[in-house]
Image 1 (cartoon, rainbow, N blue to C red):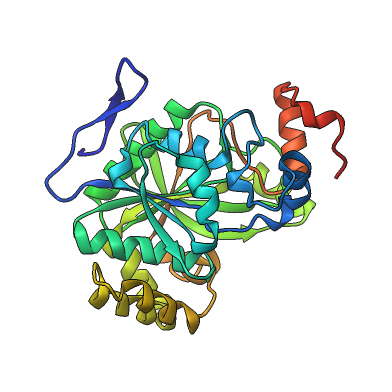
Image 2: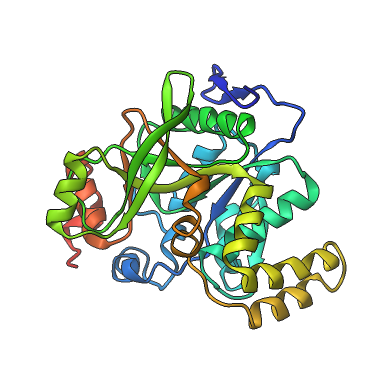
Length: 325
């Protein structure tokens, strides 16, 4: 089990690595966070994307994500997918701190472009790599337990490389703004934690549907997942060939003086593609889900959800008293 680990004294996960490739992280930070713009403007006084905002304390959402990922995967194997237009926010974010590998996209072409670009970049340099993908706008309270489970799921993928394994969160309410996963038959396990095939996805169900899903044992889709880089690229080639082909052309320019020029041309005519709808939902035969063990997780996608979560946790942020959605 090459990637299973234990907490070190300093709170980091110590990981034993196998010979078939290293464990990499992909952090998605290329969105604009339109739905949270009013809250970000109130808090920061500008139109910055939400991942560069300190909504839950002194650290930005991106910094919280990178610190969480860093419990398991070091910066030199963490790929941050962003936009060229976000360079000024990144400069403020890192300063003199160690930076992850930054892949700035010339345009936003959806989550599929960001994930496939990062998977291709990693696979070119480490063909046996296992990749874990993390959005940059989530709240996770029990971070060590969360990343410990990520390590187990990555180990499962290393042993069973045909699978893309999503992390599913135990729902606390019939949420209508989340994606849901209905688990199917057991396909394996990570220690004592089973891994299930996926019967189907349900995106933003009605209240009645969400209540039925919750009663039936469905899980919230965290959009955190582990897979071999080669498997992600094969899924992209089969499900979204037009996007895959344009990104594949960038391999010929990797590391050259023309790489940035080639990226602009590739993205200029590339389709905008959602990874969940166009790849995950279209490729169910290779998907599985693993349930997070007792971890508080929240997708901070709307001002209402941020306020609700802070209230639930008893956090008294100074801006709460003056903000109205």
